[in-house]
Length: 399
Image (cartoon, rainbow, N blue to C red; front, side, top):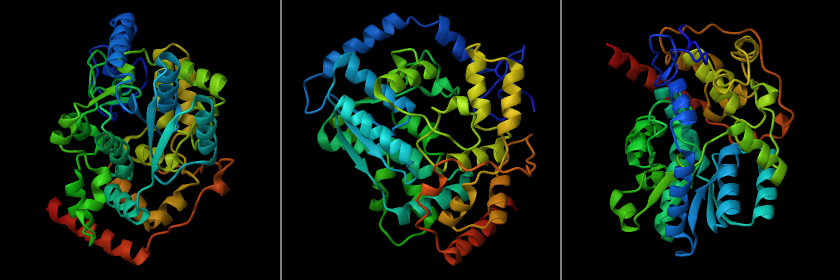
């Protein structure tokens, strides 16, 4: 595969393009971020934005919160820098890890804030995971859509017209320019958050008896309702320069936030994606489809910031990528597929020119693996019927 001459991201990366020198457009975004943006001016714009809302509503803003590094930094920054009174909104995707829960408790007691946690119906989550994996090779549709939709419903209900998200998508992709003011709106939601599947589409795909209202947490609210409260939904990374290693160190030192071991991720990146114990499976599926996974993404960031050599980056990618995660069997039990069915689906979503070859090595268990909830396995007979129907649909459209 062709890879960026600077950061080593492959040609199968979403939105990637290369210039005549073989450098990718994500590296170009980074150059603009470093030298093409006046961050002092952006900070003044943030000051004005905060001033327009602070103290004028029951809560100054909503901060959607996973407990990971980015949402923790956003929450910490807004409280420490502006002394805001946020309503923290948490969408429980079903795979929260023990260390994450401890981090959140420490954070809430050190900073002080009100928090709402929404836990969706597990039976529905299972069906959504299976269907989005079959159709898109990505089982996280419920998480993508829920995390971004649910806080907006809370904003409407409680009439809080400002939402602060964390980093911009331009940190990792080229859907938006780093110098654009990236609003977290319906355009963005449909562009890449929901995988091209609306909640109405998904309702038809899962063919269930429950009413479509059950999918409200995954549905982007109507424009009329958002306009009624004049909602602004913005990325904090539009206004302050995002620096993950620096921010992670600050929340570790100031708040006692702890990183964690993640399957097939080098230990020096223990701040990355600690909030989900299915992360190893998600990264593995990405490797099957695109020929790279999270280590490539992490070393690309370090290469752009000149914190690692290409030789070391290649070594880490070779050492950590492509191993079957220990969590795979747990994931298969949750959605009801066999391992062979899993590979059939995932390989069916391969991005050319990548061709997946199985690695004989497995990842090691994380220290907290045995404490992960393993309850709630799927009905395998029911899953088989859905799988066989999906195969027939696939053949029909192929012909």
